[in-house]
Length: 412
Image (cartoon, rainbow, N blue to C red; front, side, top):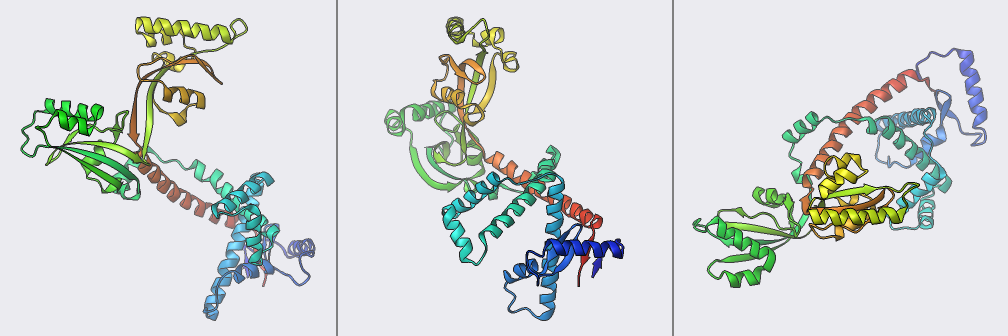
């Protein structure tokens, strides 16, 4: 069978001869079953793939189809390997070793134990490594050419989220304490509720119950609750929490509810911070900059005007025009030293001067909160689905074009 018969006979004979010579070292009995540009697919490669598939109960027609499908896959892999080589995508020995370590760790094995497990299946370990290298190379080809280039617009994302409820895919568990101030008849003044809620947050349940004996406060510990199974009003009030992981109180049919998150896997700490950045220069060493920051700090405290001093002195121009404000940020988004200081100072406090790779800083912590990242997880999953769809179509079209432009000869 011949695909794309656009090569004259003499060139084909020469190519077959050269390719045959290049594979003599494999086996004198092995034979070429397909030519893919300047590469070949050997009968032994096809046999190896077929041997790994259970085909005992297949009839002759099914076996023929299986053989053709597997051969087609080998031809496709050859084309992809050639494309990766043309684009200079190479997998180094270090990359390969790291991949082997990850595979071993995922199976709770050492690298040596993984090698033994491979060889126990009558698979040559060097052959296993060679196949793994090719697999990683093709994955990198797809990543660079398709996945990293796939763009999802905000309009596409909004449309998808509107028509597809992804919340049920987020299996986030949460431990809650629910405080219910019973008021089915809606008789309690909201100002009084506010006082009771503040007492619950500051003094705790037992002390608040003693302080306000005329109000029935019911406490309920909710363990390992799936966030998606909570009522909508609970979910919406768990979006943003205060520094102690309390929600705002809200009204239900039974009364007023206050929630406290005890443990979770969907909340992140966020800090509202401003900073002043100074850098050393040939005229001003570390000690000089440090003392200058102490001076700025003392003046900012005295005049209660951190933002004014940030505008005047900070060398971080992007934040200086906003009074040094960095807005709400997570600890993981800043360098370790900055994150450590940010997480340890009290709200309303200005830190001691400290150094990072960017220079010397003082920072002011305006507030902190806990944010529910479920929406982020849903958005990220939606983006992944949409990207996967686009990549799938692009890959299919590209592979078709690759095959159309290739010389492929099935040797009977």
